[in-house]
Image (cartoon, rainbow, N blue to C red):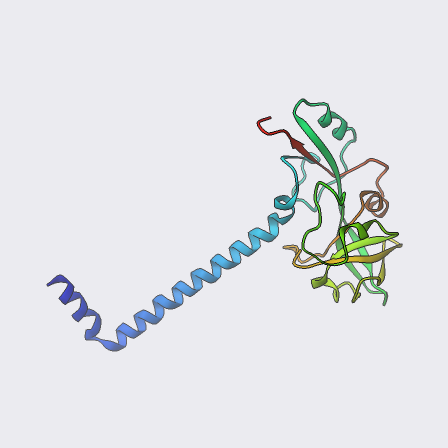
Length: 212
């Protein structure tokens, strides 16, 4: 009887029933869209940390995000390596820089100076290879940002802080939540762009043995 009364109540007013179904469907779609946006933004925000080969991060005190970090005091890598259980400590150089396009216009980029073999390795290489980052003035950018950076293919050049930057390889899908393009290069070259001394870094990525 309860089931019968429920069905009669649902179909008694057809217009109200259809309007209710539309409302519920719209609410479900809205929730799914919001969930998709949340998961997408979360993935973008944490992509660098998720992809890094690190169990621990050493960063300057007060660092608020991956991109906004000042230089470490120095010696942190040596101290980390002296701790029992530490396998490796890889320096990382990160900072905001000005990218000057071939036509003279400028754009802000995030320089990431990283070792191509460990630490934070660029992923989803679409054109070129990781080893190409080591060529003279070589940088790796995502092809999503080609037009934003005023270049179109591997071999094109621009300037970072008055120094030549040559597109050596392209990734696919490495996007920043802030939409500021990531530019991967070697740690030495990144230090030159940012103005850090030899051996200085903004992050140290530490790996430890299992169970340490």
